[in-house]
Image (cartoon, rainbow over all chains, first blue to last red; front, side, top):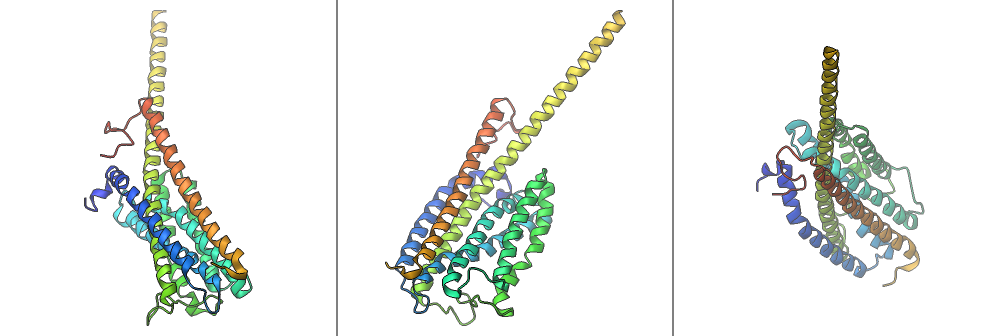
Length: 263
Length: 59
């Protein structure tokens, strides 16, 4: 099956039906391994056991940006290539991205209280992630506000691409401004600053959460395709009712004219 | 495994992640059930796709 074949929603549904159970199983397995390794990870010499929050906070923070990146590529697919599944992918990803961003903010806040002495600080990293969360909510509201999915898709695609400007701001906010948040310690020039005992569980959890996103995203895309089929069948039903109403009114009118003629 | 003096922050973080992921999974499963049910009802009323295939079909 080529990528072009997947442009056909029916083929896409067939593919998701085949691979979703395997993806779900792989996600559960990797999450179990990641959680087990996270539980066994040693305490940090400064942070103590609170370092365990990192294994849940960092994957969610990565995914909050990764999902917007996926939506941006899908938006290009809508605007440039008019791929039939592009806006389905973008719409289905938004609530999942919002959930991951919410978790990144919440777990970051819960990590910040014991380590920084505050749940929240209006610094560049935290504020730019909060803006990302609000943009997810705005995008979901936009999708719901416009009835016609193809019209909503174009507006949402433009908003998503404009919002993508926030991604490098989030990534480099810790370098560009003074912030309570620590600088990059995993993906940076010169290699990771984390010890292997923390890095390996973190990477396993990151892969597990990415698989979780792929699984949920494919399932949500399948739901969106079915929702659009419901909509088109309902419109077909409404047009049949209107058409039969017209025929009925027309034949009643003809009967009336016949009666007038008879009179 | 001892979680130290900040155990409540650690446990709340993991519990919140579990709850949010469970809500996401539940929402997607219920949505799928809902859309499938609506398609079935429409097809039972004789409303079918132009191709004649079931709207829930996957070849």
